[in-house]
Each structure stands twice: as C-alpha cells, then as structure tokens.
Amino acid sequence: MLTFLSQSSLEQYWSLHIVEANIIVFFNLLGALGLGLLLGYERSYHGRAAGMRTYGLVCLASAGLTAIIGYSDLWFGGHGQIAVNPGPIIQGIITGVGFLGAGVIMKEGYSISGLTTAASIWSAAVVGILVGVGFYMSAMLLSLMSAVVMMWVSKLEIWLPSRHAIAIKLTFQPKCTPNEDEIAKILMELDYEIARGSFSVNTNNSQEEWNFSAVALLKHTTHSIPSISRHMRKIEGLENSQVTFARN
Image (cartoon, rainbow, N blue to C red; front, side, top):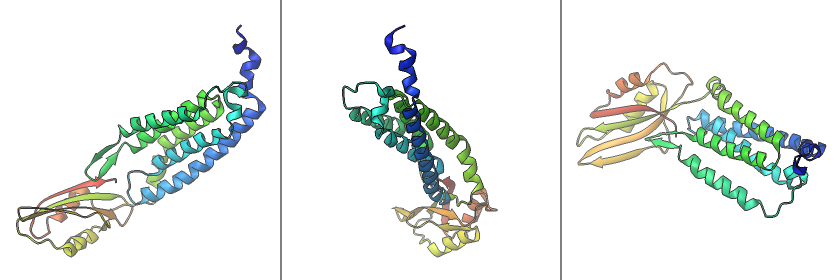
C-alpha cells in the first residue's frame, strides 16, 4: 500500500487534537446558529423574505468558515505542507459560489424568493471547504445542522408569532384624487396597517397608480386575499386593484 494511504496517515485525520478542534468548532456553529435564528426571527416576524432559515444558514456557514482558520496547523491531518496561502483560494470559492447563489434569487413585484436556496448553496460551499482541509467532523455537523434548518425551521416559523405582509396595487380613475386616510381605515378594518416607507405613486395622463405593502396586525386574520380585494372596491374612484402576498 502507498505510504500516504497507510493506516497511521489516515488516523491522523481523527487524532485527539483534531477531534478536540472539531468539538470547539461545533460549539461555535451551535452558538452562531442560535444567534442567526434570533436575528432571522425579527425579519420573519415582520413578513420579510430573508427569515430564520436564511439568517441561520448564513450565520452558521460563516462561523464554520471562520472557526477553522484558527486551526490551520491541523489542516490535512496536521501533516500536510501548505505550499501556498489558501486564503485567496477559499475567497475565490466563496465569491464564485456567491454569484451562483444570486442566480436563484427571484424578485417579482414586492415578493422575493430563492433566498434560502441561495444561502444553502453558500453553506454547501463551506461544507466542501471543511472536507477539503480535512475537518470531516465539522463538515458532517455543518451538513446536519444545515439540513435541520432547511427542513424544520420553517415549521418553527409557522408556530412562532409573526405578521405577514401583502402587496397592494391600486389604479384610480383619471383626475381622481385618492384619500390615503380612507384606504388606511379600510385596511385597519381588515386588521392590516400600511407599512412605513412602502408607498410608490405613479402618475400617467392624470391617472394615479399606488403601490404599497400592508402588514397584518395579527398572526391569523379572518380575511383572505379575495376578501381583501373585495373590500378594496369600496375605495372611491378606484378603477383596478391587485392584492398579493409580499415577502420583501
């Protein structure tokens, strides 16, 4: 058998020092995951697209990548000779995968999708880096924790209190002057409030088009999208309306 495939050579990847380092990395991952989920919950509570899963995965992968830098002397089983600085190589991988992740993010109106998929791709890149430097235990833990986040955190988000958002597009009749207070009152009756800073007004040939988002005051509302659309018809001077769920 070749020398580099000897049992003693392979055992070095699971030596006591490397196992201890992997355990420390695990606690770093656990702490990062908890803090990432906490930050993501704040965004999820307000109906944002980047919620607990996205924040959890990004924080988790970032911690794993940063933690192993402190144990560079244990890379490749602690017996490899690093001929070049691996920093630019890792940076190139992360940057390239970042562009790949950006390709799966889609924006349509007020709704954004694909953020969790992009974060999972970035996390998978970090798993590959951990395997590449010989931190097999950390790679397995990161893979397991990422899978748990993608499969189960969405169920946790449903259970936790939250306020979803809707996107509303209103087109008024020519020369009609819309009343914002009237619209706000109708939405308040439906247990929604207009989100601050979300207003966009377009004027074309004396005809105004209002685009904005509204946030639910309660986790579970009794009004569906069709019901909200029907209530929008009460607005004086309204010509067309469009109501959709929004995650921005």
